Length: 420
Ligand code: ADP
Ligand code: MG
Image (cartoon, rainbow, N blue to C red):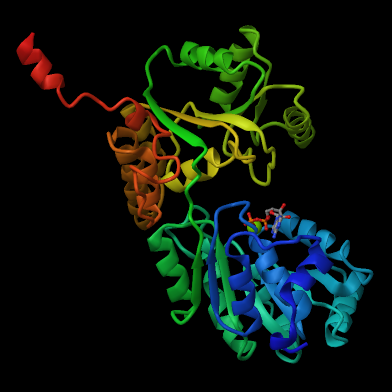
C-alpha cells in the first residue's frame, strides 16, 4: 500500500482493536510510514511498540526490530501472530533456531509474508544474516530500548554500538529509535551513535501527576517507620525496594512478624518461588512485595498504591522507572524514599572496582540522586528538569504532589534560633 492511501484509524482498529491513538502515536506512525528517520521518547507503558508495529503491518517489506530481551521479543511475536491468521507474519531470528527453522524464516521473508522480524543485536552481527537481509525488501529498522547504546543509560550494551554500521550495510532503510530514558545526555548519544541527527523527534511528557514524591531521612527507626506507613495504607498494594537480597529477606520477615502480608523477591530465589511470589502479588494474596531491582520488568499491576525505597537507587532514571510502577491506573501512588548519605557512600564503594570511565559516570549519576534527595524545591520540577523538561511548579499538573511543596522547609530556621 502507498503510504498516502492508508487510513490509519481503520488499520489501528483492524489490527489492534483500538479506536484512538494514544499520546503521540499517530504522528510517530505517520513519520515512519513516510520513510523518515524517527526518534521516540515515551515513558514505559506509553505505547511504543504500536508505533513501529502498525507501520510494519501496513508497509511493504519486512521491518527489522532490534530488542535486547529474548523473552520480550517472544511475547511480542506471539501477540502479533494472534492478530493474524498467518503465523509467518512475525518471527524471531536468534541463535536458538535450528537450520530448518532459519530456512522457514528466510522463506517467509522472501515471500513477503513476514512483516516483523525480531532480532537480538548480537544475532544481527552474524555475516550470514546480514548477507541474507541485504537481499530482501526491508521497510525499516526499529531499535527498541535504544538507550542501550549509551553508557549514560541504565542498561548499556556494547553490542548496540555496532548497529549503525550493520544497518548501513543493509542499504538505505529508515531507522526508528525508541526509548523510555529521557535524559538529554542519553538522547544525544543515541542520535549521534545512530547517525540520525535528521530524525523527527517525538518526546512525550514524563510527568506523572498522580504520583506523590516524598523523601525521609533514613534513621535507625526506618523499619518501624515503614510498618507505620503500610498500616496507614492497610489492604493496599505496594512494593518496597532494597539494595541487597539480604535486606530484602530481612525486611520481608520484619513485616511478616508485624502482621503485614509480604513476600520477598530477588534473583537469589529459584524461578518457581519468584513466579509464585509475583503471582501472589498480582492476585492480591499478599499486599506487599519486598524486592531488589530484579522485580518489576514487565510487571503491569495497575493499582500499586505505594513504592518505598528502603535504599536510595543509583540513578534518578532508576528511581523514576521504579516509582513509575505506582498508580498506573491514574489513582493514588505514593513514592517514598529513605535517604542517608551513608547509603550513597556504600554505592560509591560498590563502584570502586569498576573501570574508571564507568566509575565517573556512576558518581555523576549518584550526585544527581543526592541533589534530588536534598533539594528543598518541588521534587517533580527537579525530576522533570533532569529529564530535560520544564515544569511549571505553580500551575503544572500535580504541582502540589510532593513533600517539599506541601511542607516547605522553613527558611527561617536560623532566624528562629536568634528569636529564641
Ligand atoms: P511501552 O513499550 O511504551 O512501555 P507498550 O508498547 O508495551 O508500551 O504498550 C503499553 C500498553 O498500552 C499495552 O498494553 C498496549 O496494548 C497499550 N496501548 C498501546 N497503544 C494503545 C492505544 N492506541 N489505545 C489503547 N491502548 C494502547
Ligand atoms: Mg516497550
